[in-house]
Image 1 (cartoon, helix red, strand yellow):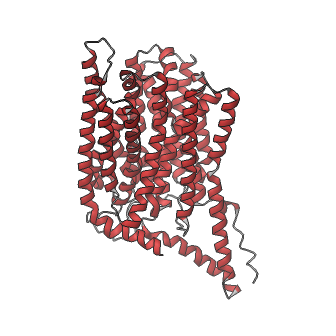
Image 2 (cartoon, one colour):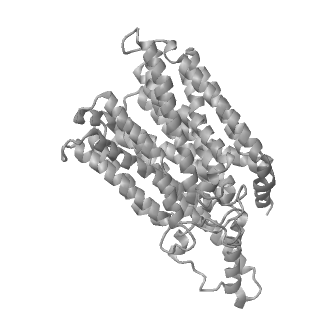
Image 3 (tube, rainbow, N blue to C red):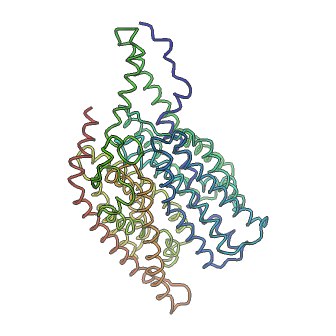
Amino acid sequence: MDLDPDYNPSFKAKINTKWVATVASIWIQCTSGSLYTFAIYSSILKSTQGYDQSSLNVVSVFKDVGANVGILSGLLYSSVTGRRRRCGGPWVVLLAGAIQCFAGYYLMWLTVMGLLPKPPLWVMCLYMLLAAHAMTFFNTANVVTAVHNFPNYRGTIVGIMKGFLGLSGAILIQVYQTIFRNRPTAYLLLLALLPPITTLLLMSFVTISQANEDDEKKHLNGLSLIALVLASYLMAEIIVGNIFSLQLSVRIITFTILIFLLLSPISVAISAHKEKSYRIIKYLLEQNSPEDEQHRSQAYFVDMGQSHGNYEELPAGADQGRDMNERRTPEWGENMNLFQAMCTTGFWFLFVTTACGMGTGLATVNNISQIGGSLGYTILETNTLVSLWSIWNFLGRFGAGYISDYFLRSLGWSRPLFIVVTLASMTVGHAVIASGLPGALYAGSVIVGICYGSQWSLMPTIASEIFGAGHLGTIFNTITVAGPVGSYILSVWVVGYFYDKEASDEGNMCTGTHCFTLSFFIMAASTFFGALVALALFFRTRNFYNNFVHRRGANTITG
């Protein structure tokens, strides 16, 4: 039987798929981690502006605040992606992020170059805040769109998106070492141009798709494999680069390989499109009535769209099929706005666990060089620890999402249980560092880095499941504020206080295990408390996961 000659998807239809949207989001995420490379350009800020270390730390604080307070990005996403917003979409959020990124870094570059008068410290802090705040817009648009496109694999897709963001710092460092080595001023200009240009080129492809496909797991596994290969390659490159002095020709070769690895996700989108086209053609060929082909093919697409109904369809907020006069309190799994979510114990349980997990993780990485110096590690060893942190961070972000998805769907394990496990493991990691034993900083930083990264994928995924996806961007960005709050308390009132107290008899420097022992035992106690709170969240939501999420996941597998 001949195919209907009218069946020939347009180019727009071929590229307007969830897989192309996912690849575009991945590429944007890969250029969005400029904040993880602050150490590269902080020295040029300090020297050209005449800052002391305290002033530079103030700029760094504004960087952390901008990167973690993303409530505005969540509100914007909810307002431009509703059902009635015909001209809106995630691209609006990405565009807002691109504008902020360019403005912040470009003004910093002009200042460093002397093209603008030397500003007061608070103005430079404003520049840094603007550049850092852009990352929340990139992250919100990419992560929330991915959750809507893959509602049955939320943990996996959030892990992929957060994982590539975690790797972006290492990727940008390779760009710097290959092209802009020892030129931090030029690197600042790169940060003002590369993320915004990448976003402007790709933002139109980041769209929400209602279609639910049978082989999503297969292609998500393909993206996961690419992420693992990329992380392994970057880890090897970091270790070799810190041990040996690589020639420029070698760096160019390794950088070229990195570019090909970054381009490889498009192969997954192409494969998904080919398999989908094959299924459609096969479906059409199996029809008995040629005159009904067009009608049945349309029905096929309708079925694909309707099969998305395992979770919320679009981030429109309230269910439009619900009685508008109904004013009852939403239950777990229904779309809640920020105020409704904040009225639940689940929100505050997540807030506390985030403060404990992300707060202690940030405090650790912010002080890891100083810890290494106190314990007698060489500069090379501490630099390697800092560089490898991004790899452990990635493994936590990706692994927690993927593994929690697997156990949720196959064994029905409630996802909050994995917060319990990771925070308990983090307690062990902090205790290992506190011991001061030979090699303890290496082992402890691996444990803490992986468990810290896991919070970045577990928290947004759990938030999307118990509060709905309607206002996910606003809700998870509000919870994320707990991270820098916890970090500030632990870094200033705990780590900084006890370090200065121990160093008072030795000058400004403290040497020995006693410099950080008590601080890390306090952080171990903090994560243990967080694990207990996560355990309460587990019991609070256990019935919901057993009767709702797991049942729907099982239906997807069998269906």
